[in-house]
Amino acid sequence: MISMPELPEVETVKRTLAPHLLNKVITSVEVFLAKAIKPGPEMVQKELPGKRIIEISRRGKYLILSLDNGQKLAFHLRMTGRLLYLHRETPTAKHTVIILRLNDGFDLRMVDQRKFGTVNLFTDDDPPKGLKNLGPEPLGDEGAPWLALESLKKAAKRRTAPIKALLLDQQVIAGLGNIYTDEALFLAGINPARPANSLTEEEWKRLFRAVREVLTEGIRHRGTTRRDYVDGRGEPGDHQHYLKVYGRRNQKCPVCGESINYSRTAGRGTYYCPHCQR
DNA sequence: GTCTCCCTGTTC
DNA sequence: GAACAGGGAGAC
Image (cartoon, rainbow, N blue to C red; front, side):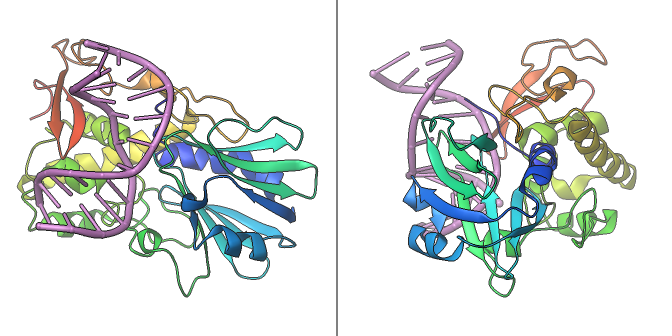
């Protein structure tokens, strides 16, 4: 089960969960995978009951619940994590990580087959490292810094590593994963292996526009479901039908008809058209 | 900067 | 029965 929630998927989960979770009170907590819970299951079980959820937000690939006492709960789904709003009587799924019981008879449940996902209870004066070091939001978001083309170029200035590695670096841009990175580079006509500091002014403009476009389209199609990504209501997205290169090894490039290549770049499986992407 | 590890289901 | 999928932490 591969799902890879990136920015558009987490944004869709947020939008589908928000109406159900807003102003609900957490009545109790059940932990099934202790190591995923930070600072620890005891802390979460002690702090959460009685707290009201006053906001549901997203920052990069983190989904964040704000509680009425100033505490926040951040979920990171990594590759196979799901967040679901389910009736209390629903049987507990295999690989369930945590269940937050709510005062409306429903639960917020995190299920994660590969157990990479994390749940982090924190306050703003002591955010988890990954969240604290997160780069700007490519589409802009409530209160978060926005990505500017200038900051992207600045980050690339001394980097000879592949442009793909730069786009995947969450400290440079928040929210891109393997799928949308490959799609953005295709749309911009840039080879993923190009050294980040080798892009021309024109290429930077195309890439900046492409990143924003693929993410916007991904959200519009309610995310990409490769195998099992589902939103907060358990429904798959549609964006897999719109991918131009990702997962299409040896298939025809939708622009030029040449065969799409698969290689390993920045430590990740990488799909690109050698003819269209230079 | 790059590599390894974490983890399990799917694919080869 | 091994290789593979990959986000991010930590090691080097």
